[in-house]
Image 1 (cartoon, rainbow, N blue to C red):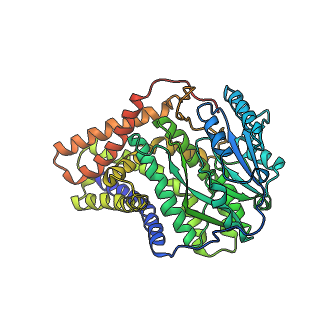
Image 2 (cartoon, helix red, strand yellow):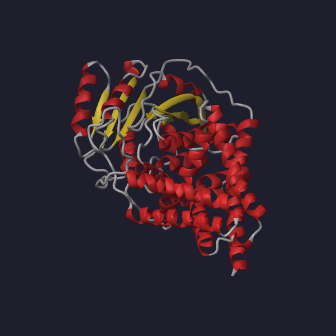
Image 3 (tube, helix red, strand yellow):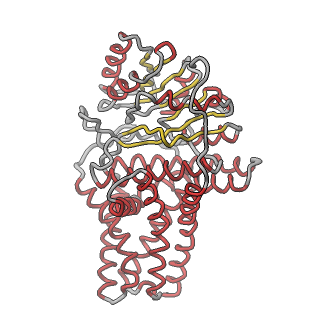
Length: 477
């Protein structure tokens, strides 16, 4: 029996190996490839730009968003703003009043109501495109507060007619509010400062992130437009556009701050949507990518990017294995301590380097604490994100669930109730892992303790956050 456990444990480590290796490769590309130089000025008459604000039930932030969009530094005659509002609550009236106020000041802003949420965000953007007058389109989600110079910063690379989209980096309005926001901020810092910059420098495909970026309208149309058959319409359209020959530009020095989810359930909603949508996009796009006349390096990186969420079921399986082995025997599968020490280093060092580099590039203080919090949050999300992977692999279609937002002065308690199944399973695993740590310590198997303790801490921390959350009804849509 112990031999079966050893084989399963080592097999899990082998399956997890490529994910750490991929992080190291991206880090290498980011640090070794020279920065790319794009045009920094627009020559000739300024084009018409449409700013699109897709929103649904955003009473806490809708006014802030509209105000920031209307303060963008761009000639009024060349600027159009669309509030693509699918809401069914009081935010409709708030948006309508704000739009009237800015129209009275000479801003070309429209409050666009479709009457349904068909296609969710993708459907709203597609409808907005059909009535937009801009040659270029900026998309801003409800939780963003763009700086006034955003349009002028994103426009110059489009002097190259092959450029289809330009993405800015996401920044954060309150990155140090809690351990949750610190961990999320580091996730996003690593995604932009390391992942995006690495892929861009290496000439690999990367994605528009759904917000804080500008599209060439002709690119969207040539790639087949916004489609709602995945929950990550941004990733889907990005890859279709680049497969059609369009080039994307990333500008890391252009930062657009946004609100970070303030509760664990809000984080789960957002991350689950991204995870399920990523797997849906992989199922949809990878066959086309591998048939395309692209370098193998492009295909491999696209596969690693789109299918990367498969890591969540693997880490969850590792948590179950560690909990079971520690609880039943506490012997660490009968393997020598050096194997467990190697497993801990193998599982953490690539991510420590990855996140540590991101924190250094963004000059975040408290490096060690931030990295540990990010690792623990990543582990604590294993259960709901595994469920999201399963839904994506099974082709299950689910509604686009918006992320609850607080804003600076909350009007509405937009909260989501706990997801019962994943919460119960997480609690069970937290208890089992803590018990495994204690059992292994009592039975004198110190080798397995650090690795098991890391998982136990992640699940225990997430479970604690669940206990601190007040009960609330689920948010619609």
